[in-house]
Amino acid sequence: MLAECMEMCARAGDARGEALTAYALGEVSRWRGDERAALDHFTACYALLSRHSEPVWSARTREQIARSRAALGELGA
Image 1: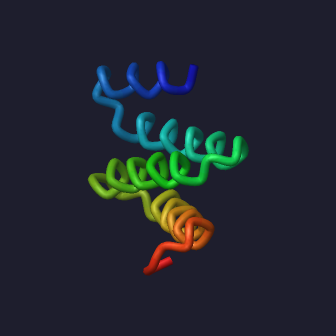
Image 2: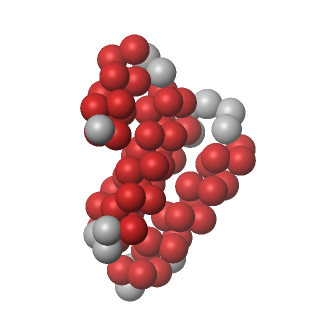
Image 3: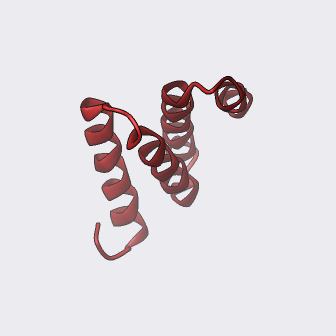
């Protein structure tokens, strides 16, 4: 359902909606125990937010990216 929502936002040109849906997908992936997918979604969210002035969501997303990287044992976490 969220993936469909993200696609709809992308087709409509709603980058903010697409980004926040990617963030929600990251949270769901983490809850399901798939930290790699969570990282992918949070990274996609951050890339979308970087085109717009979204300081609060950008900060939250950077924090989640760091958390995912730490959980995966990646450098630069």
